[in-house]
Image (cartoon, rainbow, N blue to C red):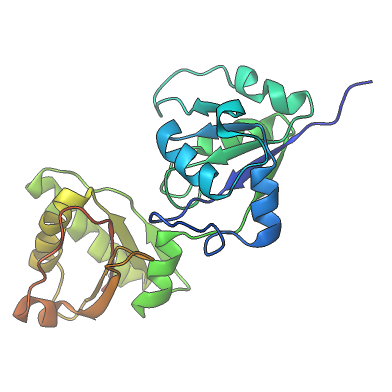
Length: 239
């Protein structure tokens, strides 16, 4: 008799280092996430930190951790899904936040759906949703645009395009950047966006240095921000 498929469990990770798992997973999800023997992860070293904090039912050294492939790699997903096809539950764990949301794992999730495998998302933190909640901007219509071009001119052109779309659609635009380029992103946004636009900068959400500030671009220009180079940030604007 063919065993039923296992489930692919999407396990959120903390946005920052925490010693106690309770603030980021509810108890039923914590027990479920910690009951597994196999995890597909973004970075094994980071995953071990979070799994130790759960804690897991099996010793860490007995767990099977497999790093997700690069986003442009050719992958035989049947190989990855074989344990699930045999009836085993497997966890998908990113380095921070929710798997597949500004984090890798979406291709594995899509392959699981195509194979008829149940996908179960667990409840946990997402920097994007926390930022839109705290921004005061339009939470009914928003678009996550991820990273913009590194080149200053190309980045400004992208901001101009997104600003026109925001004004036309009454849409909040959400962006992220590599922390050491936070200041360059903020400078470009203040240079390009219309003065009446609202810009929110959310830094180190759930962390010790958390800061969420939302104000018109004209006000930001009078008191420009000085952003940290090592803390994650989410940028949101509405024109």
